[in-house]
Image 1 (cartoon, rainbow, N blue to C red):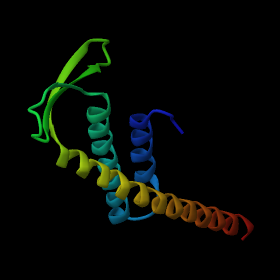
Image 2: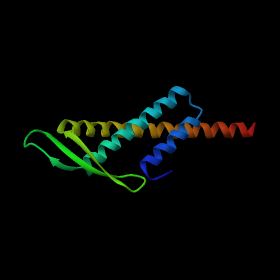
Image 3: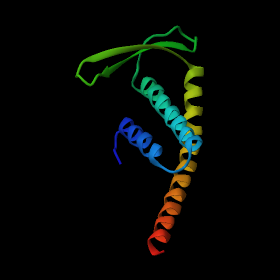
Length: 124
């Protein structure tokens, strides 16, 4: 399993499409991976962004974040954030945490079931 989140997502997308779980289940997992990817981007922006403009007591800020591209070039990403955006991101992270834990249990159960089916087929 890759360590980098983007590589994990790429790996899992390919793996889920190979599992015998049906199109609807695969789409559900791919949707979850899309949510994780979006939440990771938001987290990186908020955590690694630098506040460059903020009106006192407005609850809003303009931030910038340096992003290293694959070719080594560093680009600046400028974005607007509010305290409400940060609260929504925190709630999404909390929801995703619970969803991912449930998902891990489901995948574990699926792997156990597929392993047992494989063992039964070999012994017949």
